Image 1 (cartoon, one colour):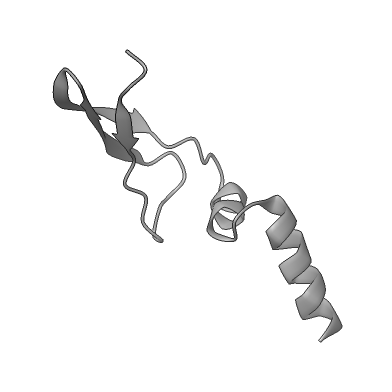
Image 2 (cartoon, rainbow, N blue to C red; image 1 turned 60 degrees about the vertical axis):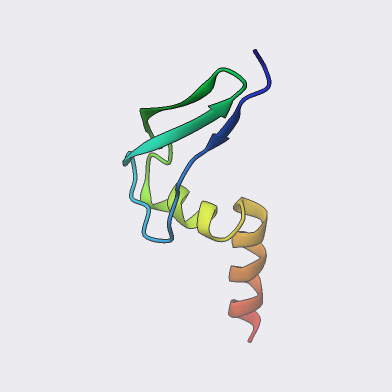
Length: 66
């Protein structure tokens, strides 16, 4: 209906292509389903952990000048 809330439980130890249970709450009730995390490589997981590719690059630049 467009009024659902999706909760995707990702932890700091997320792995590439890991399966997670997505929880859905909406006006018609609650449900859940399995979905595969589309962080396909360890590099993409690192980007996610750092808040995106820009944050990763800036963090690496700051470390290399220190």
